[in-house]
Length: 506
Image (cartoon, rainbow, N blue to C red; front, side, top):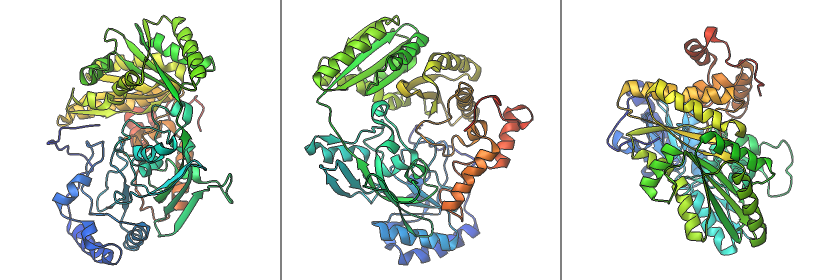
């Protein structure tokens, strides 16, 4: 979500400072003198203001203070002192989270990892890179480029988002259909518990002793431990890539074409979709050369050697022709391929030009239900009186509706929140999930009550307690309390019963 630079949204998170908070700040500031140099601890409203929110700025809260450690030992020291004083800690990377994952809570310390930016090693023979969490996503591919290697997961924010944040949210990207999400491309993670204990997850070897907890850590949203070192898998850069740009007169037909491509056994490097409002916004912003009369666009990429790319492109085009495609183009050169992709990658800033704020939702559905959900969203626009642009990773059913609103208008904010919750409930109803890659954070806490049973939520809490018994790491995020779910159920569901009781649960 984005907002005008000058606006400030009040929210339930905004808590004025108290005398108790001032006393706690003084004790913590004194304790941190042994952990980090004084210049690396920020206090005062002016210094804290940049950390009061992430890329979901409708929710804001000034932290107690911000610590900016330089190395792993300083991270340890900060965590130990916060544990001793019972101060909640919110780890923060690039601040690009779209679900409020890095939003502070009252009387918390923001632990910024922005200074841990070293590339520790690139091993071209093992095809790995070991980096600190503050390294930007795209930087990994830049340092691997001399070896004709790159890091595959490529969120649209890859020029700004950090690999530590990618690990916390299990970030995806345009090319994750073929090459996998963050969890499929991480080999090893070093992290520090709230007690200051150094933990290691995964291994550079084919297997590691003990329980395999690496996948559990990835996507845990900073609630289990603070990541300080990451080893990623690098892959060879494909020699050839071609992008197919297809337009359709109907969103349901485009959705059917997506399912048909995968049904043919074709796994493109990327398979993205935009609806007509998104096409118009992007074209006005980037001038990518899209068909503005189309109801939907598909961008489908094939990569590999020249022969296999030519064969895959021919198969993709054949499937599209069987599904009433309006127009099909194939990129003729690398500049044209990048130009077409630039439109999709700039969908969020393009939406930011149309309204003071937007919610970038993040649900997942079965591919066969894409057209059905888009039709429902069109109906919801009339119900809530707000416009919604739709862009998403169509190949894996991960959609990103962009709900436009003005957060300075309390009624519009309420309607936008209800609109987003409605979309996520429809995702669950269609057999999907409430998040694909953005995480739960603050934004989707209520929606977890729709997806998961009380027993499942209690299991999640038990795992959280196993890693963080004091409950101080990114506290009160990701796992809603029973009371919160009961309140949400009272507001939205008859008698507080779980919606869609007949669907299969996890």
